Every structure is written in C-alpha cells, then in structure tokens.
Length: 106
Ligand SMILES: [Zn+2]
Ligand SMILES: [Zn+2]
Image (cartoon, rainbow, N blue to C red):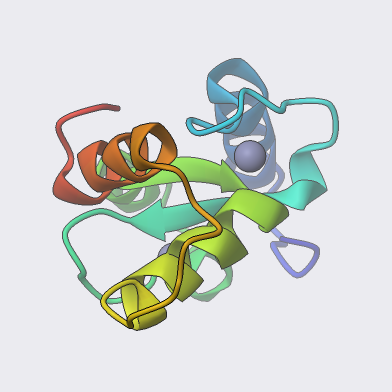
C-alpha cells in the first residue's frame, strides 16, 4: 500500500476500501488495516506490483475487502477449519466466511 507511487492508483484503492469496508465485520475506520482477499482461492492480489489503474480495477473486483483481523481469521479457518476441536468460530460466522470465500457475497 505504502509503496504505490501512482497517486491515482493509490487514491482509487483507498477510496475503494473506505467505501466497501471489511465485508465480514464492517470495519472501515483505517484503510491501511484493510486488505484485499482474492475470492475463490486464487493468487493473493499484489497491488504494489502494478500501476495500471484499469488492471487494478479489474483485479479488485475479484477480491473481498477484509480488515487485518478478519483476513487472518479467514485464512486460519481455511487452513485449520477441518481440524477436529476447532470450535472458536460459531456456525453463523462460518457460514458468512464461506459466502465470502465462494464469492456469493461481495
Ligand atoms: Zn473485519
Ligand atoms: Zn487472503
């Protein structure tokens, strides 16, 4: 985020994050605490490697905006969700996470 030189790209991404907010918990206070999570298990979106605004616009449409906490939780659920005894997450939360993962909720 900090390394993006192109001001247009940077402003677009900040605005995009601010409008969307975390799609899991609704957090939108600080945009640098918001990440892009690629929907459908694709490669994690690396915004700092592109300065092409059109390409970035396309790419963010394939992503869910998540705050750092929810992003970390989501990856943990993905990795250890099938492990027995992992019961910190209630069913309702898990359902919502699965919707985000499958791209049905954006
Ligand atoms: Zn969140
Ligand atoms: Zn992710």
